Image: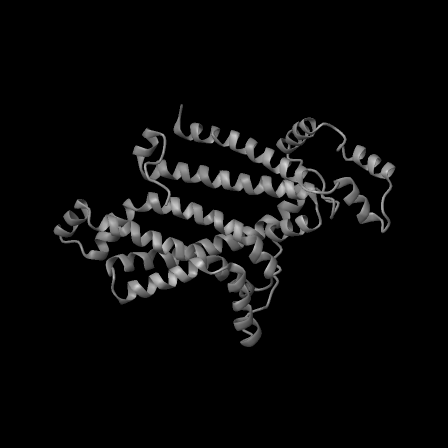
Length: 317
C-alpha cells in the first residue's frame, strides 16, 4: 500500500475517536440541554411538559447510541447541528471564525520559527558562552510564562501606558502585534531549546567534521549539512508547537477580544451551547489529525528512508 494512502487511512479511526469524545463530553456535562434552550427564550422556569416537548424536538429522547450514530452521519455530510445560542448552523459559525484564528496561529508560528531556529543555532555554535547562557535563561522564562499574564502585561505596557497599539479587537495591522507576540513566545522558547540540543548532537558528527575538512565555513557547514539533518526532529517539535498555538489561542483570543474559534468555544462553554461545543472539539481534533498527517507526509519527503520504513525514526522530545 502506498505510504501516503496508508498514513491517510490511519486518520479515519482517529477522527472516529475524536467524534465519540466530542459527543460524550457534551452529554456528560451537567444540566439538560432542552431546559437550557427554553430558559434562553423565557425568564420563567420551564415546566416538565415543555422540557419533554423540547427534548423530543431536539431528538434528545433517543438512546445515546442512536443520537451518536445520527450525529456522526450528519457530521460526515457537513451538518454539525444548530447553535443553541445564535440559532445559526455550527458549520457556518466555525467557517466564519476559523480564518481569524488561522491568521494569528500562522503569524505566531512564523515568528516563533524566525526567532527560535537562528537563536538555537547560534547557542549551539557558542555553547556555554555568555550569549548561550543568556538565551537559555530567556527561553526558560518564555516557556514558563503563562500566556494570560504575558498578554495582560503587554496590554498594560504597550496599549495603556505607551498607546502604541490597540488594547483589543481586530482592526488594522497593529492590532495583530500583541496577540501574535503573546502566542509566539512559548513556542519560540521551546523550539529554541530544542534546536540548540539537536544542533549540539549534530555538530560533533563525522560528516560535519568531513564538511569542515573540505574547507566549508562553519555557518556553511551548519546550514547545508547540519540543518538539513535536523529538519525531521525540528519538524516534530514544530508540529507539537502548532498544537500548543491552537490551544493557547482560546486564552489569547478571549483576552484580546479576537473574533476567532477560541473565543467562540469559550462562549459556547459559558452558555452551555452543546452543539457548538461538539463542533469545536471535532474541529480541533480534525485540525490536530490533519497537522499530524501533513507532518507524516513531510517526513517521507525529507527522508525517503522514513517512507520505506513506514514511520519516523526520531523520538518526540
